[in-house]
Length: 160
Image 1 (cartoon, rainbow, N blue to C red):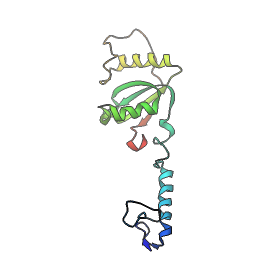
Image 2: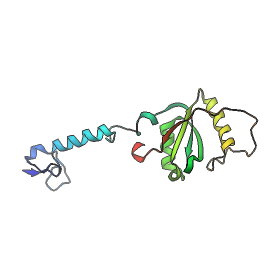
Image 3: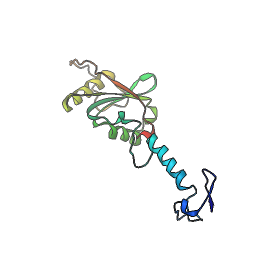
């Protein structure tokens, strides 16, 4: 008989999964408690088998222009992507400014050409501090209405 670390009940060894590295050879909590934990994690989207990003709201496909926002909704970066989830994940792991991000906005475009033009015009208009490759410093003669932005909070590591 083994005492479960979760529910505290004494149960026979058959009620525990095997665990090679544990000195008893069995898991510390019973099968019933482990199943309950797995159901709870799956319902919250934290189960390893389910790649969840906060909610499906981050799983945006197609031509998208996005803005990463800093303090006081200051635009610190403008980018484009056809796979929003992957691009934001890369920012989280590879950009040196992710800690400054407090939220983001995105707008879906009709085509990749619209997306590319929109990004360049927005960078020239707003001059974000982390977009220094495209900004020309010259005012653009093109006119473009601001897209309809959708706002979302900064994705947490568990969301990505």
